Image 1 (spheres, rainbow, N blue to C red):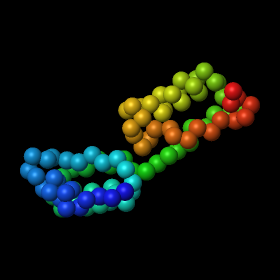
Image 2: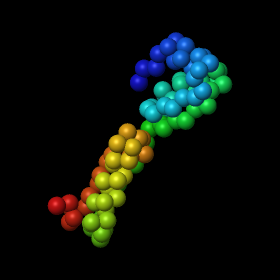
Image 3: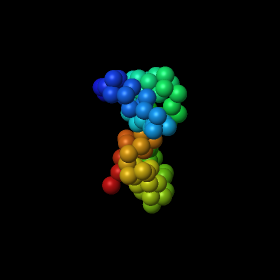
Image 4: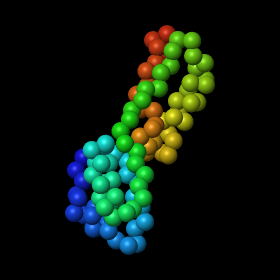
Length: 94
């Protein structure tokens, strides 16, 4: 991920800007956090993450389907905490 530090500095030094919300890589988050810190702006960061959603052979399938859908679609699928890797046991895959 490329962060334009000059542009970020310009935006975050603006007195109208009170904080920053960043979703992306750890490397990009560190860059944005450093700029936000220099400018005394609050920050909220969602960095990395891709935990698996695992469905085992003894799972309650209707429950797993419901929770899997919700886990993937929270915030319209635009959050790093969303389930992205679904691992389903062969016996219940179909």
